[in-house]
Image (spheres, rainbow, N blue to C red):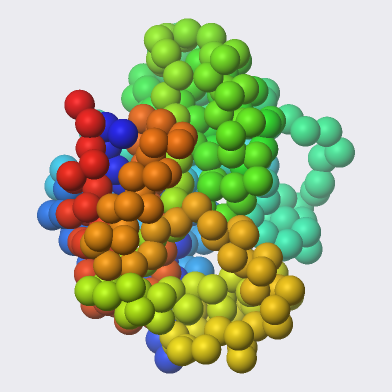
Amino acid sequence: MRNFSLLDLSPVPEGGTTRDALSNTVDLARAAEAAGYHRFWLAEHHNIPGIASAATAVVIGQVAQATSTIRVGAGGIMLPNHAPLVVAEQFGTLATLFPGRIDLGLGRAPGTDMATARALRRHMAPEDSFPQDVQELIGYLGEVPEDARVRAVPGAGTHVPVWILGSSLFGAQLAAYLGLPYAFASHFAPAMLEEALHVYRSSFQPSEHLDRPHVMLAAGVCAADSDAEAEFLRSSQMLAFARLRTGRPGKLPRPVRDLGAEIPAPVLAQVQQALSVSAVGAPATLRERFGAILDRYRPDELMVTGAVHDPAARIRSFEIAAEVLTGLRTS
């Protein structure tokens, strides 16, 4: 692992507002930059009361404006929701305003329920055009002839780095075929992690973008001064994920001491499995858990994420994680 980065969903805490969530995101980005994180990414989700990063490109602009060196990007933009030209214009504008600092991760899922997906797209195409849309988008961001009938302005010539995101073999195969960096969503969907990494690494085709495979692994994190305190703080995310899985999405809950009293045992088991690629605890525990993840999967980068109800505790969690990951970084 050469670099470590941070994924934020702008969680809206119970008792708070979306304005609070977006302000907390900016504060966290500043702290992440100071702590040594390489990237700060935001994700596109819609119609979820506990996530405020739906207008992802807008929030990226706010974060980039509030920081100065950290790379800022999308992890990711759900491309089926958008015309490739619009995304190219948005991220071309960001790259023009903040040169050398913008990343564009692309996902194939809608990032929402089907009713909201229909509202976003107005029509639902029966075919899967994601591979074609990715290539069209990359074309808009590259060198485009002056007489081209369609140009992204801004966008053309910005060469915003494009990543393929995924939690299955499809994204791994596409990223390998196009010679693009690949980020796996193991922080909430680890089932196909090892197989996807094998497919990507073994079938990678060098391109103008990369000469060899580049993998970023996502992992959950919740850190505190003691293991018990970290587990307590993490209960907020566990509760939120359980409620989302059972069709009751809401704001990020306050932490609880007894998760078993809040979540039925079968659901809790599912949540624990989904969030199993994670490190929770005091620094020594984090060091052991992160070390095991890095030894097993050998990612080029690690991206951590975690929702904590109290903003100050959330910042401190990521600061502790950065201290541990700095010690695990390789050249």
